[in-house]
Length: 119
Image (cartoon, rainbow, N blue to C red; front, side):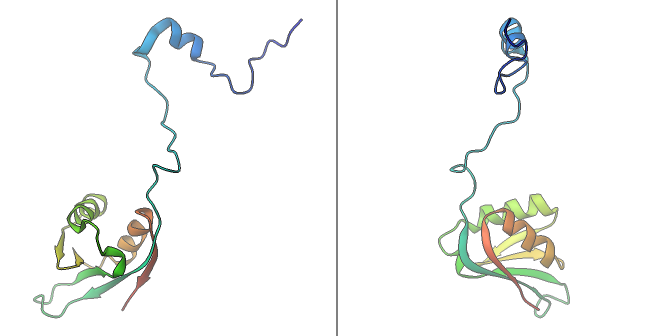
């Protein structure tokens, strides 16, 4: 007789899905390499600054990697992901507080390959 096990790539819940229809939730979506953020090789410098800001510490991110990008959306994404205030000043991102390590890690997840930390 044949092997009672399903083939290695068969979905064990496919028969159940056919009986119940689309009422079952779908599994996690597989992200194709084309849908992942593209790696940006240009440099981004993340540094802390206090002068000219009334003694308040801010984190500045700037560099050639930001050229031609929508910094407003990047600032909004950073603000949501890190839970703090963020804005755009010219071609730089300005975040409230000393967030150098957290911002550098978040920028790396957004596809920026060369994130350097300043002072």
